[in-house]
Each structure stands twice: as structure tokens, then as C-alpha cells.
Length: 321
Image: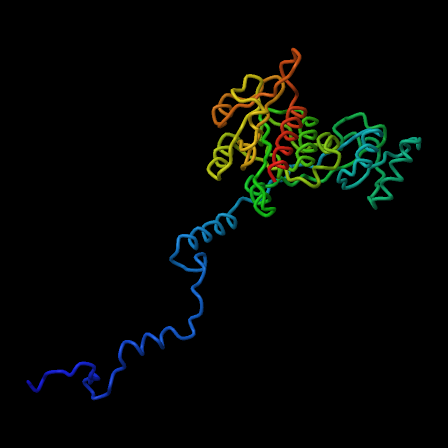
């Protein structure tokens, strides 16, 4: 045979005369100590890893929570006592010089002392100025500026609880008492938060706080600059958006039927009693849902409509769970 023929299995000589290990030995040594395959989210070039990084970046760059620009004032002896009894956050209590110490005033003093609140005495003219000329009867309470959640925080709350999202959005609701009633119902029936527009809508005033009966301290309320755009963002996140209206093409019993839409992530949009849902908001909704009623009453106010719908949804989810 020719002198340059190679015997099968012979060790190849390198140019310097040193033997080179065969591929089998190199592969075995290369695999030693590598351990189990990393999870998809931990592999830099995997789509799951990139998605997790994008989510972290979005959360880091998320706008800071908005707060009301000014402190809210509650004026009058009954109003202040009711706020203190309801557990509404209060920054300080103000008493006008020379104000008569009647039973309601003493109740305010006692409740404020129990909560360790600061009480300050000011002149009557100063109290007139602070409360904007309201009938204060010598007693006023200053509420701290309310810190609104970001709209995405409501989805995060559902995700943290490992539950399908349930969010209540209000459209054109301007009465803060209706907002407070919706917050109370949302907290009671397992919703993850309430969404309100930033403009031309009720905000977290003293009246909303009082009507919520303290629920606003447990349930986040988020603000959005553009309600329609935020509803679309919720849809992109996998939520079904349903609006409540008397002329809905789907009834509430149909919505909450076994295997129905109520079992998945859901946003319930409630309009005002007079105007209902705005045109753009209604067009954005995936379904318009009506609440069947026996009488001739055409519509319910926002607080009652939200309560009825949320109760039905919560019962359907309990039955499914």
C-alpha cells in the first residue's frame, strides 16, 4: 500500500508532532459540568427571554402614578364626623377659633384622638379661605392628595393573585358618590381595580371616599388619559371588554352562563345614568350587555348596575372554580 495511506482509527499527528484528541473525548469533556438545560426564559436568544426583558423594561419605564393636584377638603361638622367614622384617610383636622363645642364637635375630637390625628386651631377667616367659602361650622378636615394607580397595575394585581382579571371602567360618570359605590361593590365582589378617565369624570374626592365606606383604601383606582385607547390595550392583553347598556345584544345571564365570557379576563364598562356609554367606547367594546328588568325602569345608575353585574360575574366564577 502507498506510504501515505492512513490506517483506520490511527491518531492524527499535528504539525508539531503532538497528538490531537479524537472528537469523542472532546465532546465528553465539553459536556462535563454543564448541568441541566436552562429554562427558556433564562436563555438569552430564546423568545421567552426576550419577552421577559421587554416586560421588565416596560414596567421600569411605566409612568409614575398620578396624584390629585390639591388636597381635598371636607367642611362641616357632620361631614367631618362621617369621614372619621368611615375610616377615610385624613391629614389634619382644623377647628375655627371660638367655635361652639357641641356634641358633634366633641365626637370629632374623640375620633381624631383615637386615630392620632393632628388638630389645628385657625381663625375663622383662614378656614373660610382654606375651604373655598364652604359652610364649615367651624370644623374642616384636610384629606391627603390621592395616589392613582397605573392602568397596567390592575392587570398585575390579577396576575399576582393568579386570577383572571376583573376590572371595572367608568365612562362619563361624574358623580363621585357613584364612583364610591362602584369601588365598594368592586372590592366586595373580587374585582382587581377601577379605571376612570382623567378628564370630565369623577375623581377620588371626599364624597367618593365616604361612599366607598373605606373600600378605596383596599382597592386601587387607576386613571387614564384616553379611555378608548386603554380599553384597546386591555384587549391586546387578552381581556374581553363588555359594556353595560339597556339595548345590549347579550343579556347578563348569557354572559355569566357556564363556559361563557365571564370566566376569562374581563373588563366591565359602566356608563353614566343619563348618557350611558360614549359612542367610541361602545364601538370599542367586544359585547354590549343588558341587565334584564321586570318593570319599566329603563336604566340603573352606575353604582347599582356595576353591583348587579359584578355579583353575577363573581357567582359564575365561584361556580366554575
